[in-house]
Length: 92
Image (cartoon, rainbow, N blue to C red):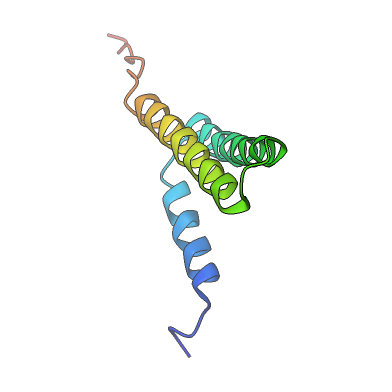
């Protein structure tokens, strides 16, 4: 029955459709950037826990680091998408 899929599967399908519109470099940059954003969020949260802050505050710091890294990755990915394409030379 349509519409009974879990939100995870719907989101995965949406990201697959969006990734099909990217060229090789931009798609690779997006995947690598997402991994870096997740790693930075985990590292910030872990360092916050080592500094003996409450767990909820460490989670918020990790979320802020994830959001900041993702914004940087998406902005630079958009710049990659707008980069100048090399002009093709027509032979006379």
